[in-house]
Length: 399
Image 1 (spheres, rainbow, N blue to C red):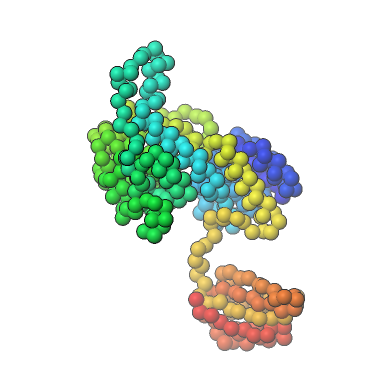
Image 2: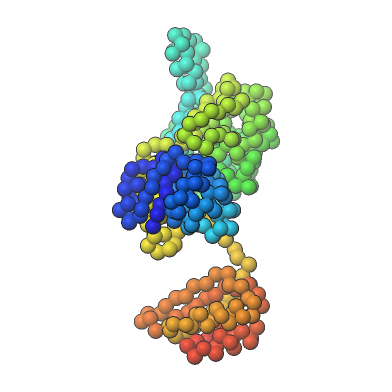
């Protein structure tokens, strides 16, 4: 199996892929047309990327079967195009949760004590204890979480270590789960915004979350509150945040920005990064040795499982629900040609197969096939399937 690694990747990951019997090409600087050309030239089965953008042109350039995002998100990959082309997309969720939570709390502490401004003044030869000796402190102040997935959950024990009560909103968070975590549940993001002294965002980027934190959200925040985003820049209406920083004195710690460069270096100019009270980092939330080793190990595991079994762990682009209307259940003797006969009969009446599986009973003498189909299953089709003397029984379940 050929694997093209088109991004920075841990040596342990490269070694793991080679040990798994893969032919590995590591070209960490590939992007844009160079990526398309390399896929066309190398014809890899698997593409592994971190921040490199993977557009439809790259996906269609060669016989790719799987794209692995060595990280939690996958918004840099054209997942819709991959689905149309029958290419699996997989990711490595949860492996960078601790690293991102550490950075989020680093930004909170930096804002509270104005650490970056302290450093800048010292480097410029200025001593200003009178100014920087003023800080609110974090103990007893409320941390509001928007999103309580893997990273959001890692924020909770860190907040407790600082003596900060936690109020959280998440679509999947229930009152029971909030009680287990020792936090309060909010009914809406705006409720979090209104009550929290520090808001920290931990949302995946989807069509539903894009631009979700808007003028109404920032309008609900307390004057002078802290806003932390280490998730994705696109979940924030950046113009609304700029306006709130100016009008309400919000302070922001941002690791992510809208339209940030795709690669490790590049020119980047954005109004928000230059505002007083904004501390920015360079989308480095997952960039610790611990996190990258864990992500590399998970990426290797995904490729190994795919190579050895044809299945893909953590796949993100399989249909959650198909158009199937019925399941045809065929109990049969385990002989060559039985399934081919069944599928030929289904095809002959113009019914489309959506999903299927064939499970073997102990002893490998008999099996049962479950075939999800889209279309009306007539009795004549069942009779045609039963015409094979290897078929024991055929039943239909309406979905």
